[in-house]
Length: 184
Image (cartoon, rainbow, N blue to C red):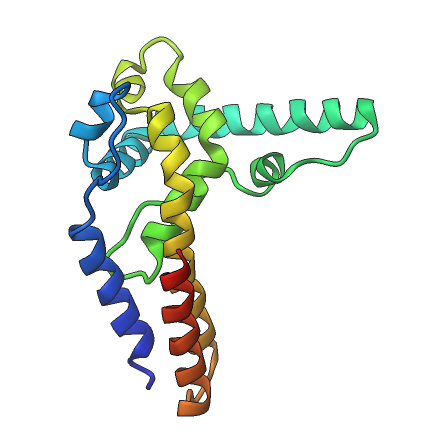
């Protein structure tokens, strides 16, 4: 049963290679022509292409974090979830074949940092990154894909946390995974 997280990882990777856009929106033909999976990877890789780019994006993330904190403190409000991500995270991770759930973590982080990525892309000299930005149509649909990936990620994490996973751990998680996927 210790191979179960590995099997889940293989299933997710296989599923990602077969994932196609099935919804149609006449207002965004460009998004239909673009492979959403490779689009996310290209955007993250472009943002991380050099030390200079990584540092510039990091600075924008930190500046946005400081600005959000100051605005919230001035108004006596708590930070919302996207602003909290800006306070915790200052880098975009890449999808790594040998790391389980790395695609989910990359997508999740990109969504959380998207305001900073967009601001970074709109700066002079970042035309390549600007051309890779996700459309509104893609951004609306991306969180639903992230929820599916999160189901697999959580099962992997739970089984991997067990030193000796047994059927008593494995079967309920498997059944719950299937049940949750059917609900989506």
